[in-house]
Length: 409
Image (cartoon, rainbow, N blue to C red; front, side, top):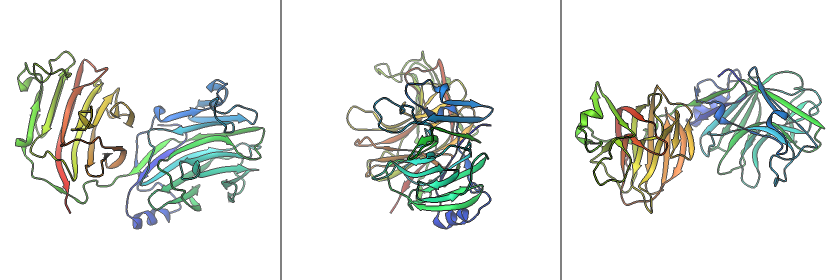
């Protein structure tokens, strides 16, 4: 995407690998793999009594954000100072190593303002702030990082190693600052202008060069692959149709499709139509289990669950659903995991730690989502298509390379 501002990245690797990357000053992103990032990942915050275009513009790939010291905060009940910022949503994180990259520009006269931050901390609101005072770039107001950044484009890379509680700041490819983290349960990146002490009357910053990158890992490391063959597949499909009308298996690819007008899986079922594979023979009630498979969703399929962890407590049937709505992969319908998955193969790894009641979702080797479990007496994995709310007339997914793994002590 030929535009602005951030390059998000998740990096999960050994300390030795991380130190090797950190020591390279030319390209802090070397070795990272692109993560999807589009307009849905940018949430603009601006003074509540203004229109967005009175404090924000996006033209020719450049995001321009400005604010006045006399402006209102971003919502009526906020006690914070004026701001116009972009909050990167969809990539909140609580573990691993993540990176922001963007090309920033601060016009002469802007001072006393935060232009980039890592939000989330313990006892503080933020883990990092990059501020501008009188033309110099500061870590908070404590130390000068770079002298004289006015009226020029500069490349910003911020690497946050959550587990090691460390941050590295690169400017134009050079490591210019290292800082301790500040804890916190969840983090995300922001950039723009947010007034601080001694703010100038007018504050502005511009950002371009949007990218999203990550360092893939192997989620199956430490797991044991369990014996698996076609006898473990149990196909669920509309009860009034033969299996071959809604399912095929050819050249190692399972193709499953259904129409919104189809019947459910049994005559008395109140559920919506589905064609799914139940992984039988590996029901579980404790331990750490993993599903791996390569999925494909053709353009147009929407309002469908394509993978689930069945079994939960209370009024729930499932502990996890991965759904597709308009090309985006969702956790249920609550949070976007990947913005665009249509018409490409993607690797899915779902790890369910039953005893800790935690679930992790990896897509293409990158940890994209963490969720709490939902209890339940037993569980199993399913994949295919299962109509949900706002389903398309035709729904399809394809799967290959399905594996079941377990962590063994």
